[in-house]
Length: 153
Length: 153
DNA sequence: AACTAAATTGCAACTCACTTGCATTTATAA
DNA sequence: TTATAAATGCAAGTGAGTTGCAATTTAGTT
Image (cartoon, rainbow over all chains, first blue to last red; front, side):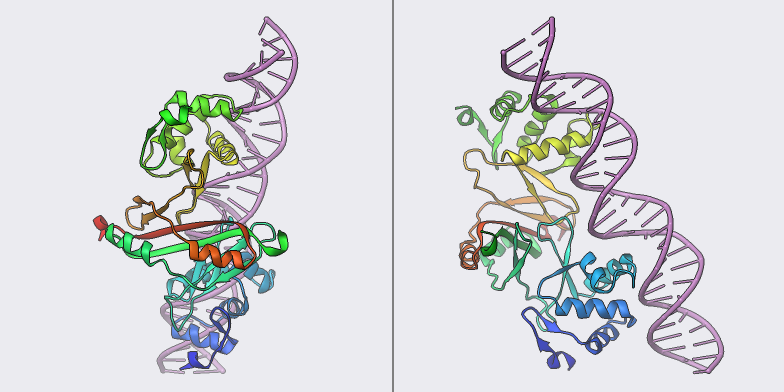
């Protein structure tokens, strides 16, 4: 299985264009340069990227940003990509961990320099229990931090 | 102190127009009908309100929504109001607890019917410690849940 | 290689939350 | 009452994200 061959990064997998092609084929999507590059760039990035940052990385002139948004929407629908709100006025996107799609992490964003760090462990079981008692199912959460980082202090 | 006279609701205080006037005066703001009503409506509401919902409650024709946004911005600046992102494509606003401005709660929003419930307890000390070790200060967080509520299951 | 249907794209126009500049009105304090 | 600052309405602007449509590209089939 191709997933096992992939190199690991902090968050998920570093995808080669070939890997991206396999993923696209697996989900019945055409392998276009835009879709391939979005997956590759997201996998290479240490922090989640905005649509506009992705558009830059693909070469702003090489494609239209509406195609970037459309691809990101598709990737979310098939569970390949997750949309994050880090307290900015736009969304960021990250690859879902393909070996464990439930695994996710949180972020601290510096309110000064904008730098983003990952926080790996996530235990909210006391919250989850309480919400289950309130009758909610299929619960999801977003937990994001901001602060002033060491450099900016 | 007027704060002690105020009736308590689930989240903060039910403000009379008179209370609102005191608060405005205390912060050097003019006591206009718009500002007064925003505070009163926020204090009466069991769930955080969007700018547009507030505008409706004030009577959509009675004022311009830009004035609602401007007032909300001022209220945030002086720490009277907090802006929340509940995973919608707009912000909601709630009154800050005046007796304990650090006190806050979280929310579960039903992805089906949009209903919003409060979650009172908030212990994220293990996260806070980790982030402090990473060099971040003045840390803040947002933690919001979505799910499918009992009625919609 | 040629052909077809479905998927993808670019483009331009649009939506929607929110902001801003400016002229006018209102509140407050002297 | 009057001067000054604050607040407001209005209209235009921003910026992220969406959408309709026509043109292009992909992929599967002959």
